[in-house]
Length: 157
Image (cartoon, rainbow, N blue to C red; front, side):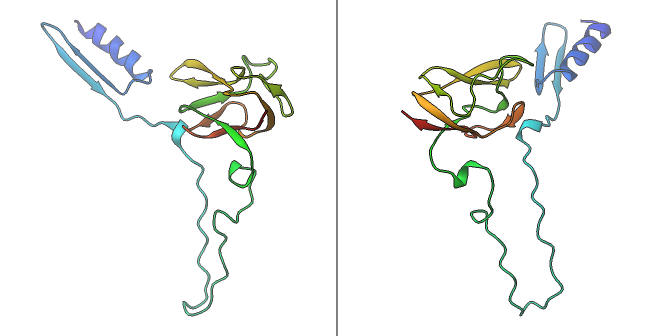
């Protein structure tokens, strides 16, 4: 392996999602490693409440707990959910500009595709596990999701 081949290998490695690479043959051993910054696992940061100028003995105003904060998330809604089986990017449509797989109010059958999760450049179809009605879509198109993220709120039929 010559210097040009090593440089080319390093270029390909730096542009890939691979974190470690080891190559060994009769005349060379090469190990490449990089720190990965998985942007898909970053969570939005909630600002901390700013301390007030009151004394510690003063009764602080109650800070809402996460259960008290109203949101459009799935924690305050009833119903069943189709959840993400993996980490990746959720897409509602088969391709840009195409109609979404499902819409709110649709009745779908078991095994019907509800969306796609792209993980490691592979498109994985997410299917319904039962006959159901779509009550709400919990994530926007092209949104990073974690394992277990609620994708769609459903009513089983």
